[in-house]
Amino acid sequence: MDVHLPQARELTHLIVDALDRLGGQADRREIIETAIRIGPFSAAQRAEPSHAVKAHAHHPSELHHRLSWAMSHARIAGEIEPVRRGVWRLAAK
Image (cartoon, rainbow, N blue to C red; front, top):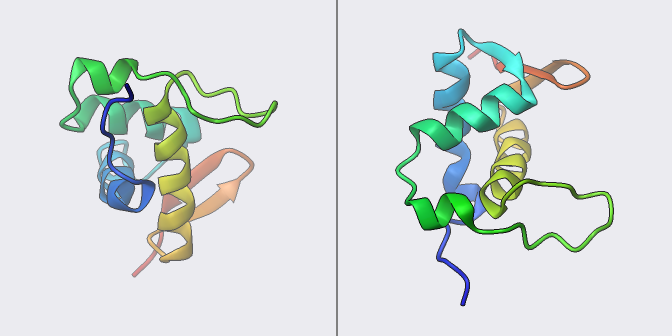
């Protein structure tokens, strides 16, 4: 049985919080790892294997996968923006 995890859209605030804690700019891996560290996740949630089925989706956990999508939602919402490949920053408000 799968562990309950929030949907990606519900995790966008963690992406913004993580970027803020990282000084406003960081690489994707740092952002996701920080979001996992600061998020209120149980050990079971952190350990849940990725549900991604695409061959190129190599996420260490389902939480990594969902936070990766949360970054996309934060970008679409105008909360974060790319600096260069793999590097993101908080968007100017």
